[in-house]
Image 1 (cartoon, one colour):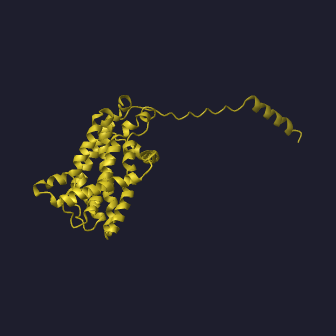
Image 2: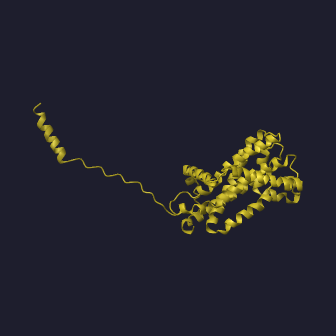
Image 3: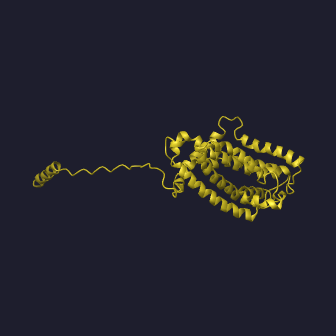
Length: 300
């Protein structure tokens, strides 16, 4: 017992005199913010990783739409209802445009809610970059979130208007069929086309303000080239190719058929052309948006 004491004291003294070397501090992670990658880098993977931020911007966009509005979401209902009343009086009663055997208010409203969702998506999406310039110039985040959140925010209005349409169908004694299950498919198509065009327009509108003045005029003309207030059978055979080239023809026609079983189903050729047009619009929009994104913070 007595021999162990000195050896322990010597060992302890030796350890204190020669302490173990301290571990080197671990380096902190460094984040490098660089210019946009080459044009072939789409940034879609970065957009997918920032899905939580996308939800935040979408919810923010929904709140901004009806901030300090007395009627709130009621404005989303008044717009298609008033338009339906005007179109019914002018085109249904005075012009006596056929409606495929359906009550004209149902025929118009079923196509109008889809078209107005698309038009609002284009309008909000095209202004998304310019309207958030104060954020873009301060912090980096995937810019594609802005037009996509603007497009997705309009889905709330569409759901509310769909409820109004179903109530109006009950008033006329009409009930949706099993085709209603396919309505989300056509709604997704409208969302995809709206997002693809918003990529083009939001980037260009941030640099050239003339785009913002042209969009309402183009959308108004586009609506009359889409079978919203008239059936496709009313178009002469020599002009049906124009309907097929219009990507919203198949979307509006398909959404109307999904809700109203007696309506004309979407044309397969129109759906095929719609798929091809979306690929071209989306890829072109991604490339254009990405190239402008590289200089966006300096030019906006």
